[in-house]
Length: 209
Image (cartoon, rainbow, N blue to C red; front, side, top):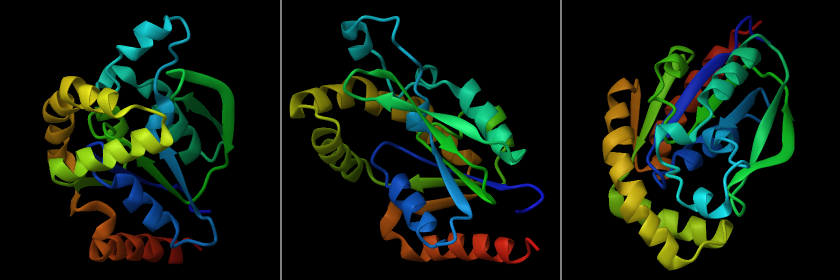
C-alpha cells in the first residue's frame, strides 16, 4: 500500500449523479485498491425516537449526519486500520444493528451530499469533487430511487423534496461547490471527467512502489 492513502471527496445534491461518478471510478480498478465510504451510511442513530419523529427528520440537513464517526473512520483508514461501517435502515429510519467490516485501501472515496460542508472532513481530502446537475434531473432521479429502492410513495417523495430537500440544497449543499477542486457537470454521463479522475488515480497508484 501507499505510505498514506489518498482521500477523494465526491459531493453534490441528491440525484446529481455523484454515486454514478463514484461507481464509474471504482469499477476501473479491478485490483480493488480503492474503497468507498458513503455518507448515507452515517445518518445518526435514531432508535431513541418514535417512528413518527423519525419521519419528520430532515435528512438533507448537516445535523442528520454522524460526521464525528465518519471523520474518525476516514482517519482510521488513512492509518491503515480496519473499520466497522454502520448500516442505515431506510424503512425504519434509524441505524441498523449490522455493520460492514472495511479494510484500508490505497484510495478512499468519501461520497455524499454534505461531505464538503464539514471543514474537518474537507481537511482530510486530497481531491474535492462536486457533481453539478440541473434540478429537474435531480428530482426525477430521486423519485425513481426512493420509490424503487426505498419503498417510498410518490406523494411522500414530492412532499419531502419541497419541504426539506430543495431548501436544504440551496442553503447547505450548493454553497459547498466553492470548496471543490473539480466540478463535474451531469454526473455519470460525463465520461471525459471520469476518465480524467481515473487517470489521476492510476498515475498515483503506479508510483506506490
